[in-house]
Image (cartoon, rainbow over all chains, first blue to last red; front, side, top):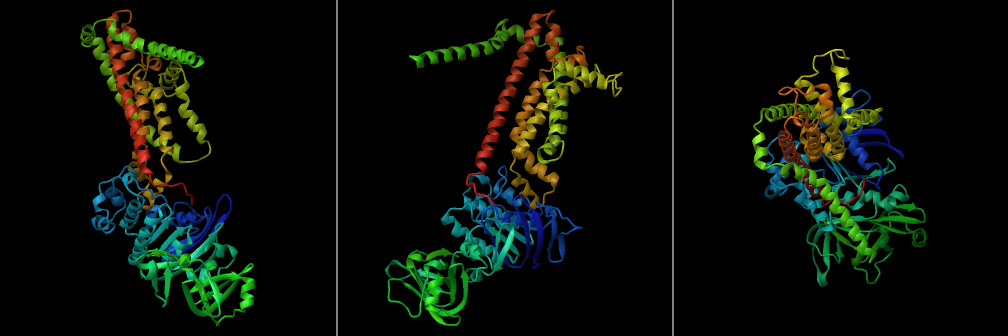
Length: 339
Length: 268
């Protein structure tokens, strides 16, 4: 698999997009609306021309001061925020539009065989996203660019499509760049997450690192949640127990079965030297990995998870790196998402 | 009381308008018996005019579609200096009096004109006059239709490996199809009724340049029944065009509403 390298500068009305990025595996770009995320995708696809820089896949240069490959000459598979399925073509014609070979296996794989002769307008949001993915993959691309793949979906469909998307990204073995405004989506899909604000890449790190050590307050507020992966199964009194991949069990009031991740916000987690005897269901003991101060708050990484406490509390507890602490939070503050 | 008075006034206005607009059309078909009208259709004057109109209309509209569609696409999708000036130049024939258009064509293509051709007073001249007067109607509608195509569809086609030509034929033209058809229906109707520019530039020679509207005028003093028969033919053709226009418009609407059912308005 060839890696994508992009180094680009592109002036927009309010600010310049300036970023350097290497994409191997799946990288997600997260940021608020209007941060320039989609512009980065469009530049890599060749739909907009940067003012300066270099874009290359492996040693194949797509853009530099001498080279310009037009979009149809770049082997990308791109999906758009509102899917951009051709409304005048059937599902099969949409998928065939850029296809190199027989599309029947792709339609089968995405469960679209039954809908092959339907028009996109009659499909649900989730079905439309599957058609968009099948259409992008039919071109046999060497790079995937996904613009807000989950934004236009309702909560239920969203978790289904998110799981399918993970599977696609895992099995396609292509470098992929995913743009999303939602940190949980980014963290569940990507190995590396870049936070982009006003066209600048503020921080590029693994999801866990971003939560534990945000570069600044903005990254801290954007990269809300811890994600703990595991297997969900029903437990006592209607709760769901998530057997963590990293060991230990977490309880949630959400009902779910199978591969899942617990989403826990750092500000819902309290820290103590010993496990408190209170109403909270979840206790994880671990070594303090890192401390990072964001204004009047401190992010403390304890084992697999990060807590956010006030600077005052951190001082009172005299937290030091390498110490053992117990992180505690409630089952009601634990959201489960299917993976 | 006031409400009733207002309603009465509005109703009277509506009935007057309808009567005024429909009466002349009805009169054409009631002035002489339908049998007389149908019999006049085999009159050589009517036959010749039908053939001339059919030939020149088909040629003129082919010209309008072949040249007008790419012109409209470029003007709709590119932004450059002087674009609005160009659009205005394309629209100018719309507001030009047809007689002026005829004189213009004559001094442009005439033997003594700018290009020194022998086109005037031939069937080619009829075709050019019809294209000149009706073309801008189509181009204007086509620009609007292409501008209404969501550019994301064009982007999607490009990332799927389609070059500009394939994107134009497979995506832009079908998506703008309803608007293009509506524009063409208007241009067709306008071209069919063309009178002023044609009589100045092509004359009114039976069997050569005499179209249906010109034949109405020529037969007016000679045989009033012929005039009425041609009038009847044109009314039926115009009605057919209007129905086609309505169908084209409703087709565009259904395409647009079915395309974006699950697309909330988030950005970036």
